[in-house]
Length: 253
Ligand SMILES: [Zn+2]
Image 1 (cartoon, rainbow, N blue to C red):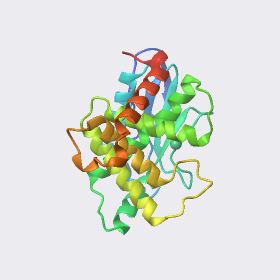
Image 2: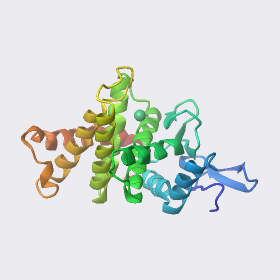
Image 3: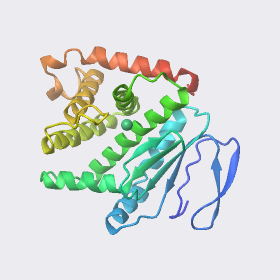
Image 4: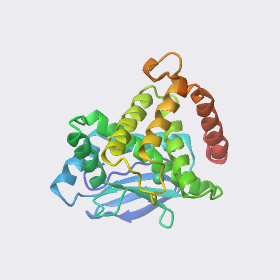
């Protein structure tokens, strides 16, 4: 693995020969989530690129996904400078773009709130984002019925919860960091954009906290225990069962 192109091989079947931007011949698997870190376009992006490379955040997320599900095709996960486009899954290309700019913006949002974002926190936000986008890619791979844009986004959030709470104690903290980021977004812009297909940030924050509380109660995160969250254990169980059922054709175990 070298700087120009980080490739994570999730499965050994059917390798495709490709040429990278730096001219080295690489082999890409034809199935699974496959990572490419592109060179950054700006100094700010360079910082995030270096962070992703050194911490290998996406590498570990993709290894986790590929160990859990047997994707029938390749989904490229491309970390890059996006020049205005945002982080998203593109079904026509079967590609997830992880935009360096979005991570730079997360840092700036925390700085504006004078709540400095540590590298550990940025790692958490990156993980949550990647699992969310992988949720879109998996719904596409499973050809699940279209229940509308908002339902699609909610399902992707719940997939991130599933992956982060499934056997990873540190996933609770990852979701709580993401909830803090949504809190900041809600505080910065208290009037949610009605055209945004995502739930309002405050709703997304509560969804994550509810999942953590539902999964951990009553032993951990006692500060999350409120009467309003009495339903969370049931909600979390329903989330886990629904996603696990949908994923059945692709589950490795
Ligand atoms: Zn989404």
